[in-house]
Image 1: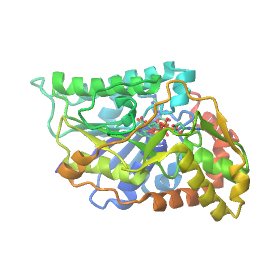
Image 2: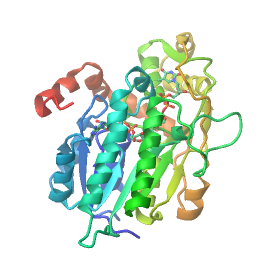
Image 3: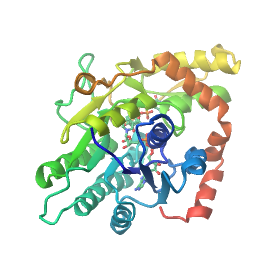
Image 4: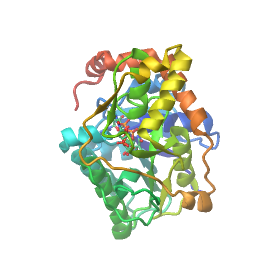
Length: 363
Ligand code: NAD
Ligand code: TDX
């Protein structure tokens, strides 16, 4: 069992990262250490997602550092300033459509940013004899998309070959290889997890589930790519983060673990389920919403099906999912219906203006 004291969480202002920080500070009494949240506050980062926690734990158990993971001097200084012994690396450009429109940022952040963090960790954790401390850990968060696209049957296991097909997944695949290379070449203590599609509170409303929830409420068109029969394996964000926490504690150094929901849905079927749920909760007519479903041009290189075989983490580390899809979707819809100011802040540009006034235009 590792004893984690000073955890550098990168991308902690994003969807999964902010839920991870909440999980540790609010729900894990076993965690008594400190979290340093390093985030560049790109369009996807929202420090408002953690405003209440900053008030409660700020300065002692939670610190926010605004900066770029590609900035080596800045990252080196953070390792020194906080005596970082653990890195949980969420920071990334994460939206496949944006990677098709503009791949360069994806390569910078996802590949060069990961390299910069790995090399800074190697340097900070090096001992006098050149070896690396064994009481430290670099955990890398990755995705099922590195494995490519499945046919009608089968699931990705940890030994499935890598076959990324978008600039996003190619960058994530490169970062996974760098993490493994730093372990094998330099002895950096690492663990790695590849997770399927997450859903839950605080997800930026460009991703399928929050986008559809908000568009249903607002009576806007519901854009379905291609024939709508692509399949994703959905896991509630808290279950993913519990898996990460389990790996941090008990995962074997040098190993990778798949995390998934064992919960496959065709996009179009999921959309009909969301229409029923949102309409019921918001008092809307589901048939009217169904009339706004719009089949649009397909995403180039659109992966047909993802499914994760997560038997390794279940068998070896005892992780299991706690939140069923019906419960998770209901919680998610409730959260978006209740937190309209969080959504409005993003959509109105007000939040971005606030970031620029308070933090300057770093990126
Ligand atoms: P997100 O886009 O919501 O958040 C990413 C965060 O990283 C943001 O806060 C952003 O400001 C920050 N960031 C981006 N570039 C940065 C940089 N150069 N320096 C510092 N911070 C930077 O993403 P997410 O959905 O929370 O995903 C988090 C991680 O999980 C990513 O590595 C992603 O590949 C992986 N992942 C996501 C999913 C999913 O379904 N969302 C599934 C599997 C894996
Ligand atoms: O408007 C839409 N219409 C649509 O049909 C959007 C935004 C998406 N889709 C489809 C594309 C996918 O088949 O829905 C599916 C899910 O799309 P996204 O939410 O963009 O997720 P995906 O491309 O599957 O990638 C996600 O899961 C793996 C995350 O964004 C990644 O960061 C993660 O690694």
